[in-house]
Length: 375
Image (cartoon, rainbow, N blue to C red; front, side, top):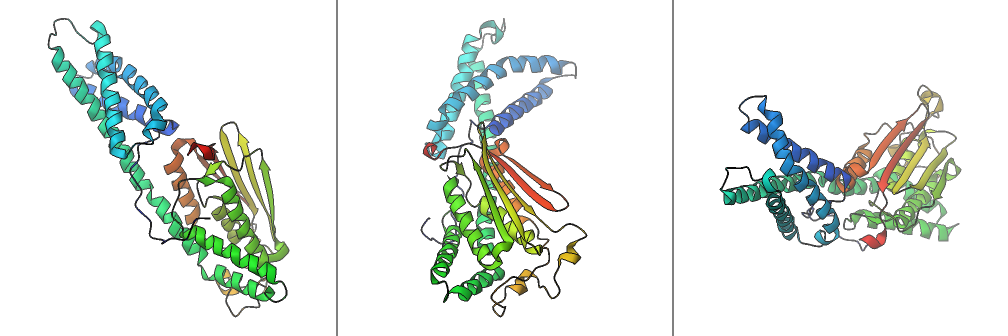
């Protein structure tokens, strides 16, 4: 676990886009063709001239664009090690050099007959290349800064979840109930709770090994099982997934907390949370499914005298905490935050899907496979 630090986080550093990301590539292609269409509209004197101008612009743009994307894809490991503004300079140099090289070797395609001012074209194409490059990099920087707020909000959200009165009171009272009869188990529970706090307050990381997230999730489940007993069961299905695979931190544990808080606690008989971790090609699949009170059956499931979780976990409670709680509606802020973090870190290469049935709730996440040694 990371050493505890202040919960005040540093601002998200400026970074170049990942040129090996499919979403980044698609955005660049769409933006460049959109700018080409805008240029054609500005140069055209009538609508009939637009297609011809687009073909002329595409004749130069397409080879430059595809060559630049290919070269930046190959140079991504080197670019990721550069400081941001050095990386911006390197990308601009690559684009300008490719633009002028293709213009020079393009022959008559880029040198119309009767047009002798070649130096004007050189300067014009170089400036256009830097302008387009600057616009795209500014867009990705702005997008990163906007979406990165989700990472800071995630840490505050998780910290608030950890210090919610119901969680603290339930856990502490459960520990007090066994401290004399099972001191070793009580000590383990306090260590697990300390690890959860430590993870919530530690400095943010982009990605962590899967084994760390699994360990943290098991510690959380152990704390909940301490008070819920056999009502809470978990079925781990880990299939051909190396434990050094990288995932965003605090990704699995909030899903489990959501499953316990909004699902298992509302069922008199409890239930089993199914956790599936599997690998499909170059994708990592993470699925969490839990039973929940069927619509229309909530009134029947609620035990007489049962309290909302905030009251059932008060310090003056029985210490057993087996009372059934009403289903919690919640605002799903944690799930929305997960979606935003996935969008920031993986763009179009990650998929988040929620399926809600009459008596079950399932969340499935697909991530690109990344190994610990690659960072």
